[in-house]
Image 1 (cartoon, rainbow over the protein chains, first blue to last red):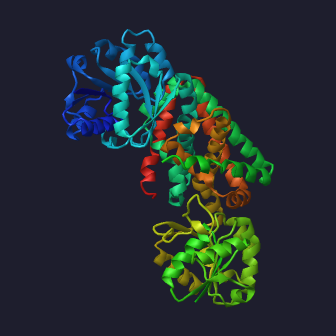
Image 2 (spheres, helix red, strand yellow):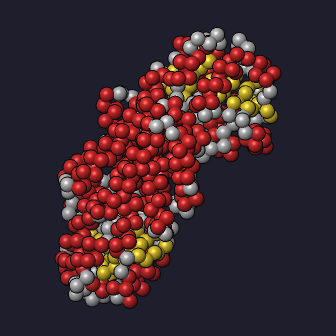
Image 3 (cartoon, helix red, strand yellow):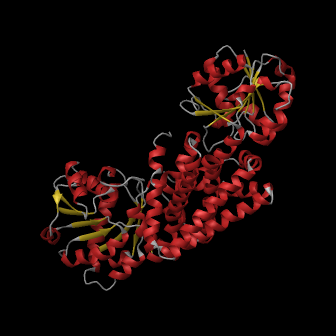
Length: 282
Length: 282
């Protein structure tokens, strides 16, 4: 089996590591705009080497794990080149515009739109780990547009990686993921910014920071190269969530200004319900 | 040695557990408005029983770990009753108003204002754990107002619990802690609220939530009974941080509306500097 990983960072590299364990005989090659990433991935044993154009034509499986705006350019080009039996899986965090752009592609049936709800705040080849996808949710969009035999191959791989599969249409995916993922990143980045700005004038403020702050601001370590395209691609849904978030914060601010502590208590008590929901998330 | 823990929840109970290991011969009694908390704490072995008024007069050490507004009422009453050699330590998350209210108290020298930067999102007697304070920062305010011999006793205990001590004046404490702790809680509660509101209409949204969401929203599990008084006591500082946070979020929203992705990238890249700072926080 010949596997190509396009984008050898956290997501692509972690797939490479698991696929190597799953298919020890497979050749795993990488593609990346950054030659340094390719070199480091080879050194780390994540991939065997760089894939050239001729390798794409021979590949049985291509995993796309590049920024979402780049995927819109790269996926159709790769689909052009692959053989009829090749399965091309995209793993990006937005799905609507990519799937729209592929809907009339002659090789649409070779393509599977997937989004693993997995990752860390780290990036690059060194961030790639085995078992990243174990017990994680994988959202698949427009499954009916992928050739049945290729669906079967994909599901078998995902099953062996330990993933739970959920099906969703692309619009619902992009809308919902804005709430449970994209908004968290903005909330975290802007919290980090607010405190860093303060720290310029007030030294040693971070000596007072504990695990609560670390947890809330963790996502502010995320890669701007990955996240700028996500906010671009999912701009309208993200704006909607952000508007609601700011409205809720402003309401809390008003309650504080009005000394309405009974209602502040109520707001927190009702939100405590999140405990029930978080139990299911690891 | 006779120890009294006033408020047998996460903070007080965790002190009780560590003090029991440190002073196996000590009697540890509890006070709590909630009789059920006392009963559960005895069953868990956190305390030996309930403290009556006569026990306060005999105590060598009193740890105050109750909501910050309650502390303002309770601390002066306890100080009235304790003997001259007794050390009374408050552990609350705001310090200015409490210390102001005690400044002319005849037993001010028996009091030490401390704030351990430690905790979890859980509360109640079951949340109490050993070693909660190990390698954590303890902020002490107005140290010079505590009797030197009692300072010495306190420092020896904190040293044995493994804490790093920092000194700060009460105004600076309350201002800075608003940034690195209180704001994180509001950010997290309102994020939880925003997503819960959405979920009412969009079922199964949480199936899409991963560890990033869980991390950012973790503090929304915190106790409203503990946090409402903190926001009340530290209202002005919290309002200042919240205003800056909302301004930063609104600026990000504007950048998105203007499609200024270059600047969005810049905002995130500059905030990535938080990585350097978070390295020091466990």
